[in-house]
Length: 343
Image 1 (cartoon, rainbow, N blue to C red):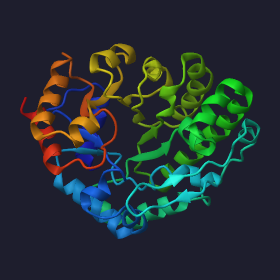
Image 2 (spheres, rainbow, N blue to C red; image 1 turned 180 degrees about the vertical axis):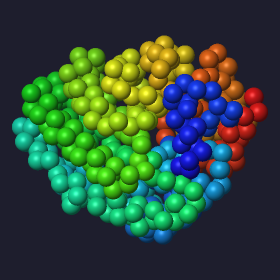
Image 3 (cartoon, rainbow, N blue to C red; image 1 turned 135 degrees about the horizontal axis):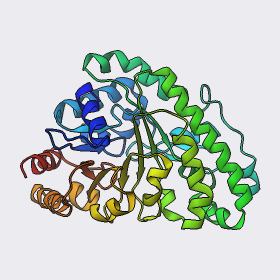
Image 4 (cartoon, rainbow, N blue to C red; image 1 turned 30 degrees about the vertical axis):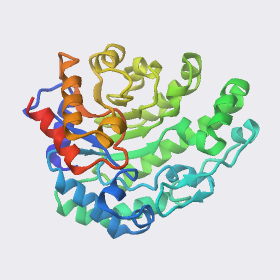
């Protein structure tokens, strides 16, 4: 992000009025390679191609905030790789991290990785560090430390079904495994912030938290997220969960989250009521049905519908109800920005 975009983001999160109506999207490997017309393998294996693809996105849409901005990632493999997951790489599809545990007892005894040496983490930091001078030459900085959330990582290590069953059938073992993953995330965020002093924001992504009931949320999710977000004095504490589910919304402020990206299945007024007035909302146009598969007119109508659904537009950044999906065209992104600013 450039300094103007960061300043706008912080001001919106703080509840201040801005001249512009902020538009922002989460962009990463599901969207960027196809839009830039390269394969997934080229995107992940080539540092120069990674930089050029992100550079083109930033330059093509100068009035759009891309979050977190120049995201050095390896899809869902990034954090699970540090625990020893087998990684499957495909030329024309996203990579996959294989599960390594089948029993809750094994998950409970999981060892915390060394974030400086293990898995893909060093490569993620090196790619970003090697390109930092070019990023800065464009007027941008590394502003976010990023990680998948504790339940998301656990679901890859055990398998989603197996992990969800373990939360119910083996709560003590599940809690021990999640505690280790939580401490790992804190180490990982801390290392990113030490490596790039320009970082002033934290961004966690965890869709699995939308799959649990309230008792499980309070037992497993709430303490883990509170521990992570309270460990750092970040200006922006960003959380993404675009799975269907409302439980987490009412706990955001208690956790310390001040920016929330949620499912398009939930309306802005609905989330605003649950989250309260102090959490900035990022959303909530349907990513697939409208942004990817719809026409420019569909995008315009969806944006206006969302904007008309809520009277108070403070602490709102107009976006998808989720990350940018595959096959979203330049024309549809431009139509989105026009619809917001010309309303």
